[in-house]
Length: 381
Length: 131
Image 1 (cartoon, rainbow over the protein chains, first blue to last red):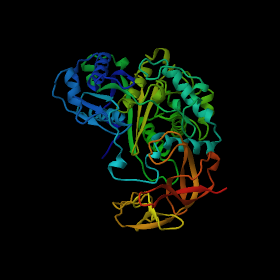
Image 2 (cartoon, helix red, strand yellow; image 1 turned 60 degrees about the vertical axis):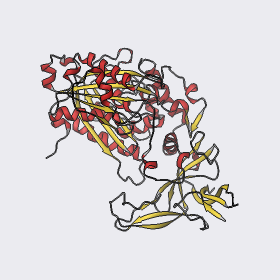
Image 3 (cartoon, chains in turn cyan, blue; image 1 turned 45 degrees about the horizontal axis):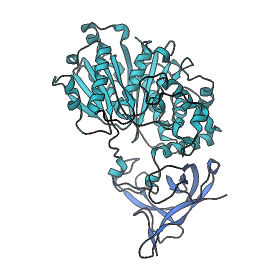
Image 4 (cartoon, rainbow over the protein chains, first blue to last red; image 1 turned 135 degrees about the vertical axis):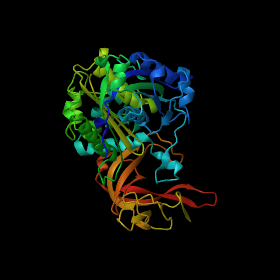
């Protein structure tokens, strides 16, 4: 008999920490990751010696990188491993940490996403696959094709895509950990350079470096370590799926729809219950597509509702309150864990200037090349 | 003579261009680019080559200003073409077009990407959108 995460032992996020996302620098990945892990330990109020297992979300740095990093917190001999799942690496590391606690393998587990943009090996080239377009199609052109199809299907305008970046830049300007700290106007977002299709530079996420850490724990650990249950954010569900053959329907959106539906059902909530959502807005068009795929807006309606402010902090549901991938940044391994950090902060009511009022239920979503999708639903203490 | 710019994706001797795909003998799924390891729909190993006509409908387009290709100068337009013979493929268009081309018919024609040292034309299929 199988069971979803929600049917196993309760899992709580007890501590989160971030190293600011930034342009590539001389800072070693070890320093980035340890900074985030120490911040998460301090936030939880526990010592490193309480952590029983560690998963490192990473895709672009180096093999076997966990132990070289965690040793700077003290060598405790705990199991540790890298989790690579493209853009969803951090989300998958967090899922593994949750599974260990839910299954009773560990009372306290940590997921650290950390990366520097050192090497980007794509699976198709490793497999010796080639097509008619090759490197003429970069990732942003994949999404530019989606953007123009969305324009065609829904009569949307390039300005409506750009409004996503305007909103997320406004949120990112309130986030000290964001790589892009400037609030941008519509004219600034639409300004050249044009990259591909309707996408301009500020409609594409920056890929830099950084780290994010989340510590999860069982009920027993929260009690036994004397932690404040009022700051422990419950992980209601974890869902992960891979692409199937959709025959005409866009796979990024279809995979998001399926995976989100599983995560919401396991959590016992509906899309209408969501207060804060962090999603894979690597390119502006994606936020509109995924808002609709998640059921937060009817097909073709996300752009208009975004323009009305429904997805602002303080709106119907705050989408990308952190600034999202577009403004907080997308250093690959950290990104999915960073979403958990943002949701945890929001659901505790500790978001400061970025706080979405009354945030009770949050959802984190990442897709990764392959394609894979990972979704978590979290609830306020 | 004409030489194919890509190995295994088409035969430069064809006129007009056709594409080399595969068809699954068990579930009839058609795929391009071709592969031999197993069908991505049903897992069958019974995969046979299939010639696909270079004709279809424009599903989407994107005019590219930034890219990593070495053999073409931007801007150019990439299209997703829903082939009449099944697969949704990506190809370069002959002309730069905008999103209003979505839904139009398109057909492949040979384009010379370069001339090699022996004077051979190195060609690839690009698609022309029909008005």
